[in-house]
Image 1 (cartoon, rainbow, N blue to C red):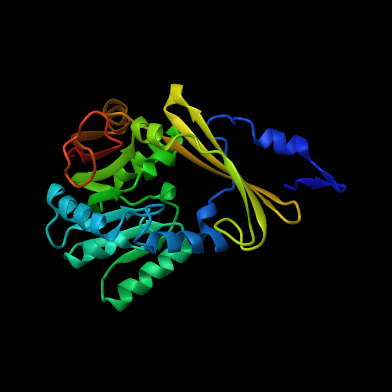
Image 2 (cartoon, rainbow, N blue to C red):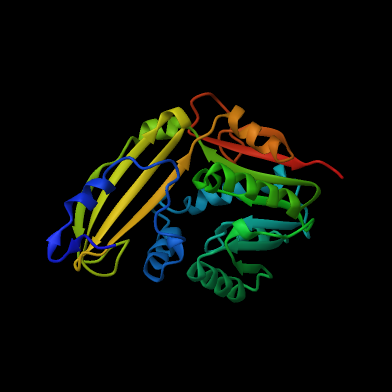
Length: 289
């Protein structure tokens, strides 16, 4: 869409984009695979000084060590890493002798992950695929969905993914994931602002960014929206939706799709769960068949 029509600034369009949208209204589709944005995102993943895309290396080391023990993963076990990005977890798991399959729809991240695995002689299978299309069956001893990936999904997509993960696991297979709570949202707050960049995260050329934060507290949902206007008036709308959870609501979502929840923590490093935690780490299990 364009903000300029017949050399006239379309304030009506700008006004409509500043209004609170319906729940899970879509923005640009699969934009993390955009040629420019995916490069920016990869840099964020690999930057050890920011948590914008991934946790710091020392924290990832701690999580991997705990997950291997908590999921009872012996060398040779098959692990599915969903939303694997550049392979930060997959590589560490493979170094412990696990057979890892990583799935991510960013071609740039998968290319980096494959190159890293080849350079370090790690036998990891990487697939460039939207994990919402996962159709594997009874192949894995464990599956991972880390750093709040489940939170970005509308309920129907969340439930579809959970069914797909259940199908992909062997009987008795375990599923580790983490989700955010409203306590994280309360600390972060609703972000509003604007800036002009010659080049930036969203676009390689000059552009204006309008950021709006919208809260839907009655649904435990938050939207971080970026309206990006390029020099020629082209408008792109990027929407990051976040569904927050409580132990009760994430348990219900998992149990409705056939999982049995085995435990809660305040992270996926074994910190005991406490009310007020900003994250919930969960281990669930597929019942034997």
